[in-house]
Length: 338
Image 1 (spheres, rainbow, N blue to C red):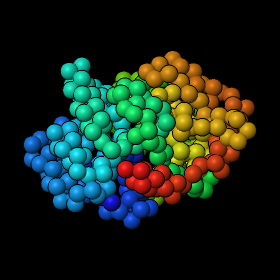
Image 2 (image 1 turned 90 degrees about the horizontal axis):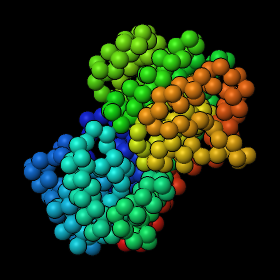
Image 3 (image 1 turned 45 degrees about the horizontal axis):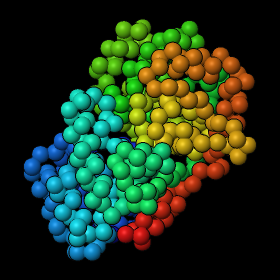
Image 4 (image 1 turned 180 degrees about the horizontal axis):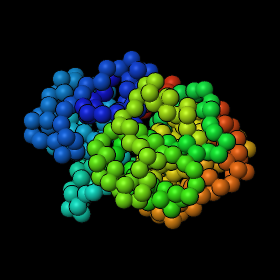
């Protein structure tokens, strides 16, 4: 099997997913350079070359950021290959697109997904949406949810003051909403560390405008032991995204018994899940709702009983998380069907 993915400059949930699945399956990733989904002719030619080198009838997985942006390359290849597309995020869901850009990407995505032998989504919510939105046969759309590596329980603090946001500094992740909500609970003792790739200048100015200097810190992309240390010290993961297909950081936090405050978008409620008792290990709020997010933060910071209830649910949910071997088996099952 061949796995074709975009060559990105920094870590992301999608790149981590691809890497872990390929490691489990013993498959080498083939990277295609370019500013996807807006890559130029040279990068699209590189994609065509990567697919041209695959023998007829072979199984190929192509990351949706690449595949859905280039139907002129992928559709002909799908006619001779057992080609599956892995959708991490529907292209038109990216924040900041003009209506024309969103419509163009949506049309490109539809053409690619209709031609693919199979489509793999990372959550059941996204799979259903792709079927309905693009008119796909349900039998061709599958789910391979991300795995999680169970880690040592986070130490936590009695007052729950250590907030952690793990998300790239892009508009889709809603950092501006988070900062505005934090400003509404400034009377409480908290600190918020934001780990994620991107230029923090605009957000630093927003933090200063709200008088939160020193309380909200942007530390750039964190990986490996550095990211593990951030999770180990956290009391609560906060995620204010406008769109997510799954939200791998949610299960990364739960794998350490850290509760989650997140927006109820896409597959995030699936990732959050339930403890065996049915208890929810976190709080969900509508996207873009500063008041609702601030209200949830106020509950977390001001109600010790709420903190203990959510911590207990997160520790119990931790025991139910599945590993990357389960994800890899789901991908293998798809290969066997196409």
